[in-house]
Image (cartoon, rainbow, N blue to C red; front, side):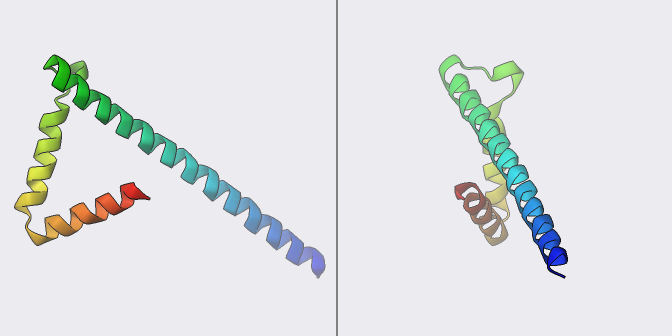
Length: 87
């Protein structure tokens, strides 16, 4: 009976390690993408055109306007997104 519990504990530990690894990968990818957004915005400010033809500042402005036009629901959604990025 003790081997069953040790096997179950090993499976739980393995699952926790897998979840931790996947979460770390996703966190790294999000940080990398946020860096690309920052570099794209800075290059657009400095050089007047976006990176690879992408209008980063225009896209960010559109997203912010959509939050603003949604009223209170947009404010709540924006606060939730900010909370997720601050973790």
